[in-house]
Image (cartoon, rainbow, N blue to C red):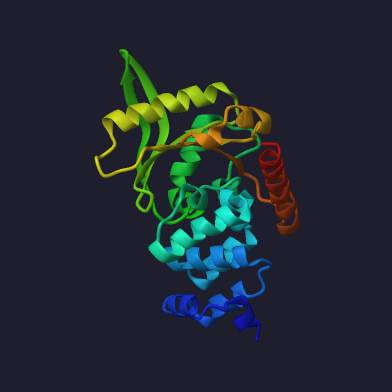
Length: 258
């Protein structure tokens, strides 16, 4: 009875049953909202998550950390429908805030180069946190602009989005001038590295802390730039949930103020 109530559409169930086990469904049924269930079910299908991975994604509140959870329900459902019917991922289904990087083993104080090296040392773990579809291309990507050298920290590619993903690492709070720097990287990549069948590159600025009002004023959501915060220290489950709820609440306040 719980299963039929949670998944009333026989056509969707038939599609999911080809890739999800009964144990997958037992994890999905208790989820609070239909939108949350649909998100995990479709992401599980398209990314081929094991039961263990699905459990971990739910426990780490992946749905709440994606931009789609903060959108009006009608728009969020439209993006999920595209995923269900056409296997089309949108950036809002891919990028998260915050990223949980407690596996890096960083000390209390560290430099940007330490963060970059720790990510490269634990690249497999970092890719798992980013999500399926990311492929690592280069570190310290060199760009020569007006005779000057510029270096992007990390360059990835996302197979489903068909986009280059430029990642810039910052150890402090987000600053407004980070936007201009990332825009320069993205335009260079678009001009020199993007293939004809690919979409425009996306920039991910990873910061220890966000400045919500600055991000809102810069209207980064209207560009191909997204800001993600990261957590580098292990937190007990309840404290992690509290921290994640704070991030989500701040993001929703930003959305309500628009």
